[in-house]
Image 1 (cartoon, helix red, strand yellow):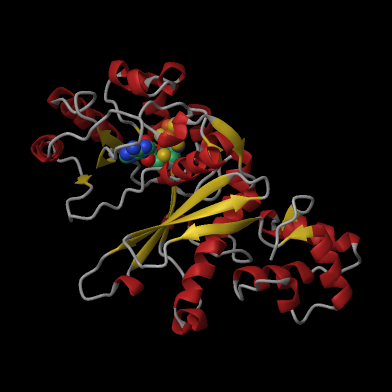
Image 2 (cartoon, rainbow, N blue to C red; image 1 turned 180 degrees about the vertical axis):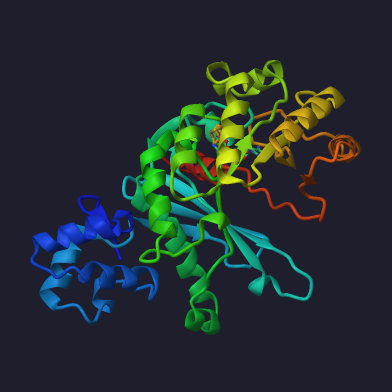
Length: 370
Ligand code: SAH
Ligand code: SF4
């Protein structure tokens, strides 16, 4: 169905907001739940699919709401460990949503566990020096409806894959808010989206299976700690000292480690769950053994898990990942200190979809064609 920018995305409505809109139309209170069940449980693709709604109501809904505020530009047909969906919003902005399949022994890729990586902004204002999204600056925030609709697109795609999947309605195991954008710089939209994703009238997806990653916007980490939906937190640390971190992440000047680390501790104490520290390994920048030792101290103090991610090359940037020997040495130092640490690619699978890269490529191709 074609999107219409004048209408509000239905996927941005909460049960309360939709009930209020419908009440103005003289509809009973249960109507909103009925409509939301069509969207999230029965995966209706058009208003006509909602067969138990009266025709005039369906017409009003079609005039008032956009059922899905974006369309799929392309996604690979083949099943792969990572599938990227390139989605076009009503203003022609492009975002990407990634399906990451975790290969399991004895289970075909088709039925493997799936993590969905969603975007929260078009571009990003944080300007991290190593990141494709940071390179392009911020175009705009996504609204809550655009954040939630990415998950529906994933479901439609997976539902369509096989008749069996359609019959069972495909699902996924984890959501990571690690696509394009800084989620905590778009706080209200992400908070509403999380409510819709978590609520039983929405996706009904457990908060413990959702991880939000931030570059370290301290005030909003504290705000998130107070949010009743207890999602997991990941911090993009990437430097174990202010000197190294400020060199690659401008946000560190506003919120240096002395401010960031206590906020992370406050979050983890409030939630009683381990926070993850993400650390991209970039050769000659943050891969020294001294950084490893300092990271070990930080992780121990926070009782945090460390996720080491060998850098993914970005077109136009000269950064490189360190040698495998150096990567292994780095993780060894952490483990020697009994810090729980994973080194991605250990299993031989590159499941890191470097954020923003597919969009960057398509934007460049479009610019060249204009
Ligand atoms: N803005 C948030 C979430 C999106 S970025 C954040 O920064 O946490 C998701 C993760 O991908 C971050 O840890 C980010 O640092 C990492 N990342 C960005 N560019 C990368 C690259 N080229 N290689 C590997 N990881 C990258
Ligand atoms: Fe933005 Fe995260 Fe990329 Fe930094 S790493 S520029 S915060 S998307």
